[in-house]
Image 1 (cartoon, rainbow, N blue to C red):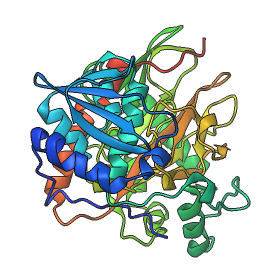
Image 2: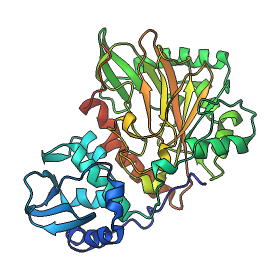
Image 3: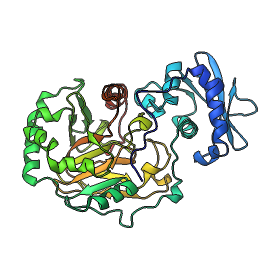
Image 4: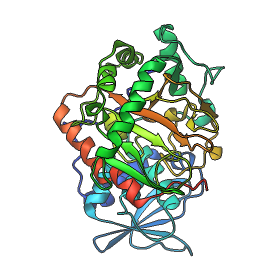
Amino acid sequence: MSVDLRTRSDLAPPQVAATALLARDLPAAFERLGDRAAEVATRTLRPLLVEIDGEAWTWTVEGSRAVVRPGPPVGVDRWALVRFSADQLEQLAADLVTPVGLWTASSLDIVDGSISHVMDWWLVLRAALDDQRWEAVADIDLPDDLERSFAPDDDPAEMRRFLEQAGYLHVRGLFTAEEMAQVSVDMDAAAPTYRRDDGRSWWAETVDGPRLVRMHGFEAHSPTTAELLDDRRLLRLAEVPGCGHVRRRSDGNAIEALFKPLGVTEGISDIPWHKDCSLGRHSYECCSLTVGISVTGGGPTTGQLRVIAGSHRALMWPALADPTTMGLPEVALPTETGDVTVHLSCTHHMAQPPTERERRVMYTDFRLPTPDEEATRAAHTELMRRSRDAAPRNRSQPSTV
């Protein structure tokens, strides 16, 4: 089992016009999908009326098969209506963006119905257009002890097997308490250099006022952190999957430092359930490794990472989903200072908000090597700029107050 799930390349992205997609390619793809459309959709699919530059097409189910018909729905009382630009539909089909990515950027125009109707059809779209064969949830085999943690010098083969099956790792005591104490001091010193809307930080409103919650490019403010990025203890984690993962070069943002304050009322500090590929580009980049370094410990009252074991192996909504409907176990990952968590970019996870004491954590990542580094970096950066970095301005996490 490999965690390299890529089926597309930035060297040869799909070039399909929206009109050809709707009139020819998508109907053919739905035909090849056959009865699997009903298996992919976890709920009954409401007909979806898709408007593109004044033209209308209906995505619907006839029998157990998905079909595309020109014009509005016929013979039904209810349907959902979404408007895409030609460019948006082409990017959706090519997996360069998802409905979640458009929604996060406030550019998803749902006229009737809800995003859930669009997301249900997105599952069918991906199953029809992508080469990846996902596992049925009922067939996913998981490790016996989902709360298992590893020591830094444990057998890499055991760590790889657990990561491939479960989609995450918890490594105890990778860094020292003294190193994390210095990082914490550096976070306090760096905070005044960030400003709201500076393009390199996230902010949230709390019961006590506005708070800085995420600092991009923190390595420039912390010599200790910069050294840790090149430390063999950290780099060894990239070798665990055996896929050649390397540290992402990302224009001065190699690592982000996060404050997790109490009482967030608006904005995003603790991101709800999502996959890191939820905005788009799954078939170009997954699975990358996201590494969380616990500057302070985390737990039920101080905030912690929670994951859905095995969720990287199933086709499901990449965000906005109710974890109780996924059919896979939810696992909490409490940490001590200096511990590290690793999760695959396709693993569903969330940051549980603190309720008694604030938490501090840093995040960096390792990506799969690509034949065209510049093209991949440019495409990834554009997606982050358009969607992820707009999230704290356009969306808010559920309030804990």
